[in-house]
Image (cartoon, rainbow, N blue to C red; front, side, top):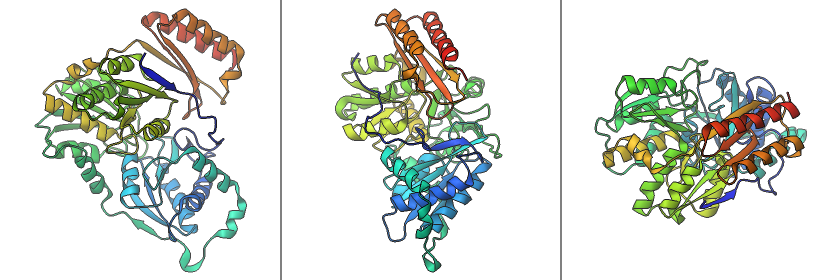
Amino acid sequence: MASVDRGKPRASAPARTLFGTDGIRGTANVDPVTCETAVRLGRALVQCCGRQQRPHIVVGKDTRLSGDMLESALVAGICSAGADALLTGVLPTPGVAYLTRALKADAGVVVSASHNPFADNGLKLFASTGYKLPDDVEAEIEQVMRDTGGERRRPVAAAVGRIAPVAQPATQYADFLHRTLPERCHFGGLKVVIDCAHGAASAIGPQIFSRLGASVSAIGAAPDGTNINDGVGAMHPQRLQDAVLAQHAALGVALDGDADRLLCVDETGTLVDGDEILAIIAADMISRGTLRHATVVATVMSNIGLEVSLQERGARLVRVQVGDRYVVDEMVRGDCNLGGEQSGHLLLLDHTTTGDGLVAGLAVARLMTEQQRPLSVLKTVIRKFPQVLLNVPMARRTELDTVVPVQEEVARVQQALDGRGRVLVRASGTEPAVRVMVEGDDEARIRSYAEEIAAAIRRHVGN
């Protein structure tokens, strides 16, 4: 296939113990996602990222009940290190990333566990550019957090930081979203159902589609602090699929709790995943000559069908390890402007610095209205190969490369596929689980293979 696989972690990547693929994450009020951690993180962030004499740190959050608690602790740490905390309140993660760079802040933090269940929470960090912090900076922050000598460096008197609200953060972000579209773009009554996962986009998501002329129905848009991602949103799209069919809508938009990922539903009620959305947007960009270096960046999880679709149009796919941060790293390195993950993190770097479900959703709606074609037709640019993904819960993180019987089972399956598919086994970066993915041309066969590998993991690694 016309692809480049850079899926292995970089050998020079520094060791981190607190940070996963997307910040610090876990059960709220249980180590490491505690107020104590948040205070230390706030101080360390200022020390490592503060460029100005009096740094400014943007702080946002999603709708979780624990968000107030962790935000308060984080802000206390920031102010105690002599920086000012600029609060956005509830705002999508990509909105915080946008405001971090728009306000020329030193860094940004989002209190969110994204698509995870309500009881979890997390802390995501952004550099002044709006990009996620690189591994080496996160490693430096961890080191500073462990350095108790930092207590002696606290400012006093007038040097301590202040807290200030950001002026109309939702309006600023909505205006930015509007500017990602061509001038005079209008959705002309396009019937859209949007599922906001009871999360950070519950207000702004429906509003921006309505502002652009769509006829909008919202579900999962009544957050109460405990219902985020609960049976709704990108992780649970069935309710949206049913609503699209019941309301005869043209498009369903499924966001997750912090709106940094997107899945769509076409007019037939069929789910459209991140690979398909990438293929749709890429085909348009190729036809317009705007896909830089004729390259899309995705992860080792993306379907072979995406490679084939790009190859047929004279483009190529570059693969990296799982995690949108690594997709962005490669996009910046290769001067690429389109990338993402099958799970729905979609990166349009002409506009954004991180995955943005609303930017991508608006792009899909634009193509539907411009081309006057339903989503079910647009997605025919890609023919997906059958793919089975299983999650094997683990009580502890295990380096599977060292478990010989598991590696032997993986090798056996790869040999049995005889070049007509792929096997990928990896530890999750966001939860205690191992992901087993098998891809090939026979769904029943690859499901059997995936289950055999999962059984070997349970047998030889266990819980």
